[in-house]
Image (cartoon, rainbow, N blue to C red; front, side, top):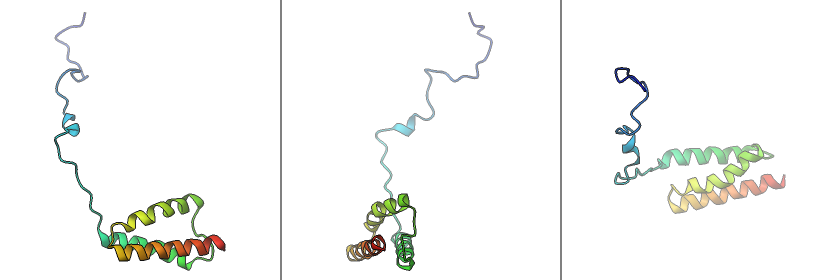
Length: 99
């Protein structure tokens, strides 16, 4: 039997959980809004790297990542600008793939 006068460093297994509010289903879900200027700058940097290269400037895993992420990131920009950036990036990748 344990001594009731001894204190335990282990928390109360059935007591209140201080992190339980992390899983509160009634709490509003935070909404992320990307900064279009930051997105634009990052996409233009990636596009500039591609334009300056004679061959693919990235490892295959990074190329695969950019093929997926670049078009998705463009979604944070106005439609006309996003479509143009996607087209320009696809054109550069096609040029680099052929090199």
